[in-house]
Length: 210
Ligand SMILES: [Zn+2]
Image (tube, rainbow, N blue to C red):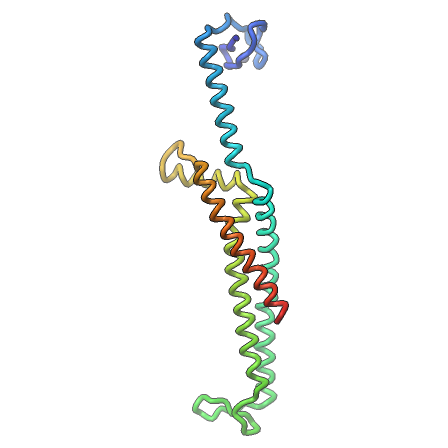
């Protein structure tokens, strides 16, 4: 085994010039040095293997990531629709009250132009608004829950780099997320995904049934 003195590349004894940089190669290294080089190489491969294991995202988790992204898009649309629906129900209620002619009696209770104090048709509106607002609330919570699983399952390397930056800032140079850390983050993300997905299904079904 020969080691290039200018670039450090390791190559076979039969070579006279470096395979990488073209520099002239000297005498082969001693057997002790050779053992050290081999060990360092194995270490490097081991570490690369661990790193890959850290980034390896099973297909099911990647599917969770895609489902999270698709659900977030659907929830954004649902939130737009429900908020515009709340606006139109409010306007409809005001129009109806205008048509019935509202005269307040000073005590704050509603009295209509025809003398009645209650019109059952008007009671439907606050109920409808309340149902729509409840759906929006569930949709919003689900959307927030799905952001982390989407990022962790679709962009594991970016999240790992971000975690590393934060950890180095807190614990100093060389700190890195461990296998346990990554696994724990994934377990939490799966729970958030399950809750977010259930909330998405609930809010879409509730909206459709409305
Ligand atoms: Zn070289």
